[in-house]
Length: 106
Image (cartoon, rainbow, N blue to C red; front, top):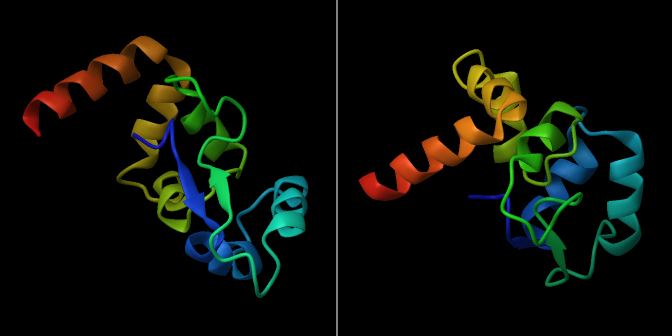
């Protein structure tokens, strides 16, 4: 569901300044608006590429190390969940179907 939405700076600052699995240019663009201290409540899109579209770009961002939240980026680093990231990256239809099934279950 993180294909649309935003997160406050305070929620991803630790990832920004401590994680190594983050694209350098993505990191630099975030640092400009989310300094080491301050701007805690400034919002940033969870999907920097297509922030207002419901699509599978979120998973493509993870493959490019452009996941905003630590909890998102680790999906690609886990042997259990990386399969899903790769699967949904390659097929938006698979993502849409899986998302619909998950929403019904909820």
